[in-house]
Image 1 (tube, rainbow, N blue to C red):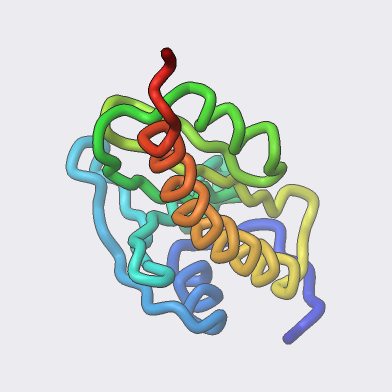
Image 2: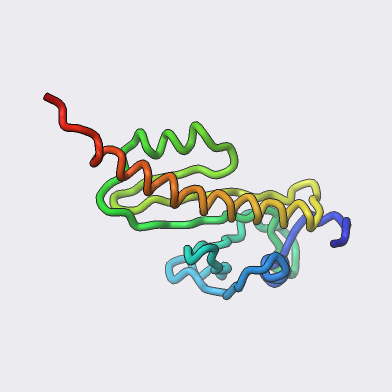
Length: 151
């Protein structure tokens, strides 16, 4: 890997970086905002890679940050304690809930310049967090059902 500093990315550059980390990547377009983004998956769970802040005055669509987003449908609504427990215990990605869905979100910034190794490490952190989330939700959503009823 090159130790060249990256201060901004295009969608194509980001796609190449994610593919080099071993992920299959496809380009999609948000049907509401008509904005292109990338889709990938880890351990069978799909996630989006959404470009963030764009650089003004650039001829090419360059951006300085991305949001990694994994939305999962769960049975019923997630208890606030479950969502808050994740957010208290983990630093890099935040869990949000809305009805029968939870969304894990992680921002990655290249502001000021970062290396390719740093961006790849952020993708590896994301991969681990998504895998941890599945276990966390499985145990957390099962726990209330397994608890004895109050007398």
